[in-house]
Image 1 (spheres, rainbow over the protein chains, first blue to last red):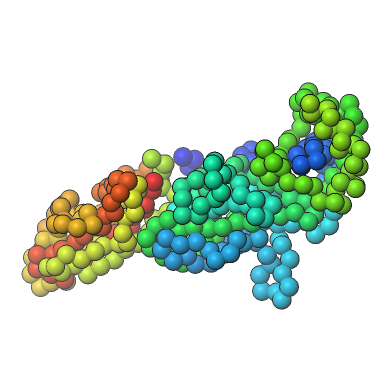
Image 2 (cartoon, each protein chain N blue to C red):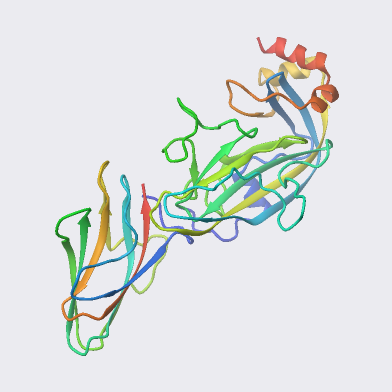
Length: 232
Length: 120
């Protein structure tokens, strides 16, 4: 195990461990309608730490899935969802205490990490613990992209027979401005991996989620259809 | 097993008497408990002996270790914990049964404190 658990929040260390994007890099998101590709224009690091999910009794889970809303306001907005179309977020998270299991749904009500059945919070499938992704040392496995009108929800389970006083999450976030890439030659190169591109699947790989309507309109329905054709 | 993380250890305390006392929560199935730190304080006005044992869900606790304590003695073990520390005791459960850690003191009145973690 690494000797330095403390000075992990420097940008250099963050980027060495976690696949954050740099300006002018390309990335692609796979939706149900097909790949959309874009180029990063500018970025800004930020974080939410600590984000408390609250206490857990022995061998129990949270009452509801948590979409990481703002805290202490009357009508909370979701912190991990971009508030405008011009931004895309990429983030990684860690959790403490290490025993606690975190389950994910993205988009909400779509189980991530299932093998045969739906997620069973009392079961042993489809979660990450604080050992997989330590609070100060998030794992690349926790990667998530969010666009305007799309966010993930999380659920916590305490598998030990002693109450957990507070489950804390640490989100390392990078906000990107971007421009769409629609050029068919480039799209073809991205799909075939002939150009450097960072790809992320929005949801389960066999059934990615549908892109929000604004994105389909903005990127272009015909470009999406063309990309889907190129995938074959 | 992975090394210790800074936020990983949990605490359990009990005042040991001549009767068996449970130390820490129940260990669930398919888990390993590692005890990394032990602190004993003899508050009996005589020499004392502490027995540390594990207990399946029923039956007699099976002793794992004994500590002799002279009058007013305190034992802190080890002096220091770091990421390379190895556990003092381990306790494992199988697919079906749970376990408890038990402690007793021959002359009663021993303050007992451990730091431990449960891992799969």
